[in-house]
Image (cartoon, rainbow, N blue to C red; front, side, top):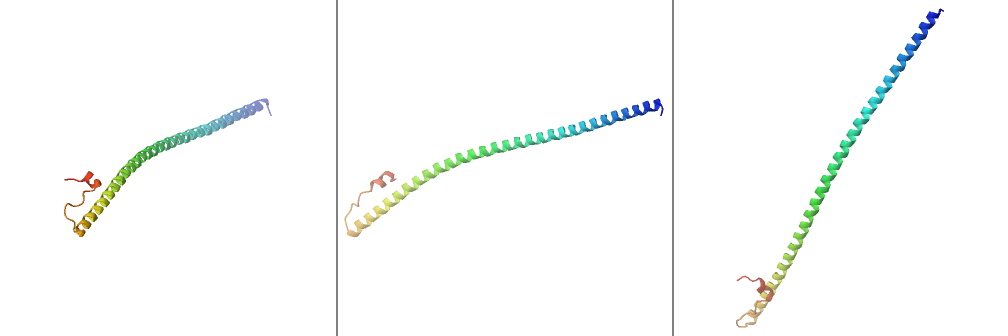
Length: 127
């Protein structure tokens, strides 16, 4: 073979190697870019999910705090109602006792005046 053919063949091989190398580099860079783009999308999605989760947790904490306040109010109301019920039960028993005293007074045939009002009923008695 002639020298020119060898030079031409060498040039062809060098050019082919250069084109192939360039193609491989571009292809690899494209993969890295796709990987980088995909990773950026994944990172953004994870950040969005984390942000939504944090917002959701704040909402839950706010709701929990409101519920705790409402429970405290209900407990205070319940304690007040229990106190009032106990007072009414005491008053009911005082009335029952006084009614029994009046009936006993009448049954014995005792003359007026009737037995005195109990102190518990005098405090709350409306005239």
